[in-house]
Length: 112
Length: 113
Image 1 (cartoon, chains in turn purple, blue):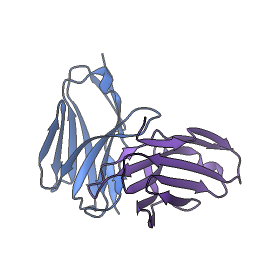
Image 2 (image 1 turned 120 degrees about the horizontal axis):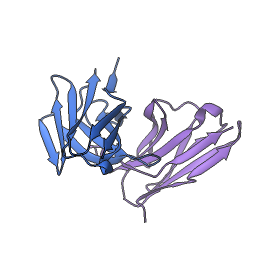
Image 3 (image 1 turned 30 degrees about the vertical axis):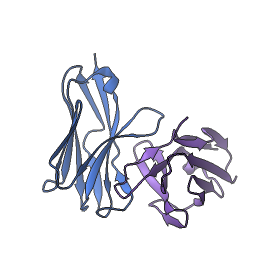
Image 4 (image 1 turned 180 degrees about the vertical axis):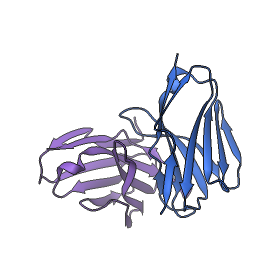
């Protein structure tokens, strides 16, 4: 079984809809991250969490929110999706301050 | 402003040759730098980490150098194979340790048989 899983893997939604992307990990890591990847723009950090009680904004947090339900679970929500949130979304985990990251398989989101 | 740049968007080389990818950064003082491999539609996979006090790191056919004076890392794949074709990302910590990584946009490597 994969150490970092993301659901759903693909999602099509409409402008204005609320959507949640979920990430689960079995690696026992405290640190979890959400990124989006767009062609030509690379990976950009949306939110990160260093432990269950810690949530921090990344470089592009506007329009997104997160919830860290447990050490193993970190969810990303789009409260009111818009077309420029169409992207490939990745969850990642890391064990310590050296920040080697382990990525999930990604969620491809299309907002119409 | 802070920047991390991978100089080539794409690099094509012949099988068996050495591929060299470049990562330059500006206005960061990283404690370490990392390289990842990403295949199309998949998440990045960690390859190597090099600390600021290390000049060179090797793993099988991979070699990474880190020059904090030049603010540059070079990533080499020797005896390249078509299976090495992928996008390679460099990443560094934003504020010198214990901070999230910032990623370059990547270099897409194609190894031609």
